Length: 102
Image 1 (cartoon, rainbow, N blue to C red):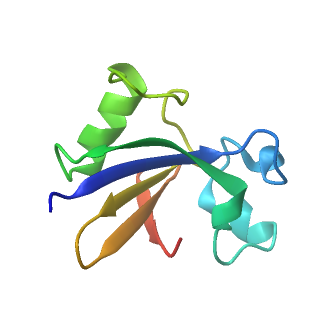
Image 2 (cartoon, rainbow, N blue to C red):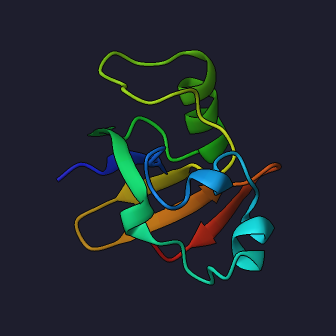
C-alpha cells in the first residue's frame, strides 16, 4: 500500500476557530497539550508524492492540486503522512514543522 498524504485544517465553524493561523505555542497556552482531532477537518487525502514537508507546503500553498478543497496551507494546519504500519503528523508552525500526536 502506498503512503497517503492527508491535510487537516481547523474547522472554521468549530471551537478552535480563534486559533486559526496561530502557532503551536499559542495552542499550548490555550491549554491544548495535544491537538484535538475533532476540531479539524480533512481537506485532502491523496497519494504521497514527496515526504519532504517543505515540498508539501509549497504544493499546498502555491500550486494547489486538483481535488484540494482547503485554503492555502498556513500555520495551524496539520500534515499527515500515513502508511501501512505508522502514521506521522506534523503541525505547520510559523517557521517549520512540529511533530505531534494527533
